[in-house]
Image 1: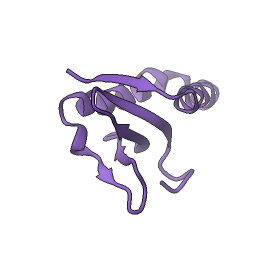
Image 2 (image 1 turned 60 degrees about the vertical axis):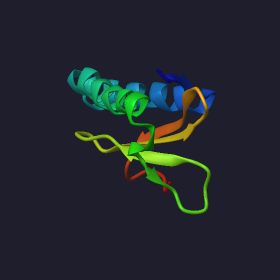
Image 3 (image 1 turned 90 degrees about the vertical axis):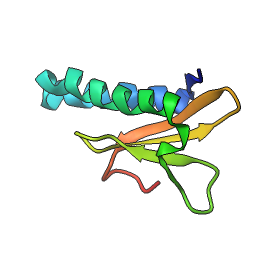
Length: 92
């Protein structure tokens, strides 16, 4: 089974998401994290699930409920999460 690794930037994105939603919708933080991790966990079994980003070496998946983008690369033995951000914030 593939493992999931987070780059420092992805960890910082996740902390930023948590901090933001703790201020504006604290009751939603657990659901948001579940949504993000559910999508990441799907990649363990189906690494090609996300859409290939044209002219880039990574793929992206959009979470089902809260529409966060998760950018990732597939290594021989791991899914490397590059970044996690709100769908409308950055183009990837």
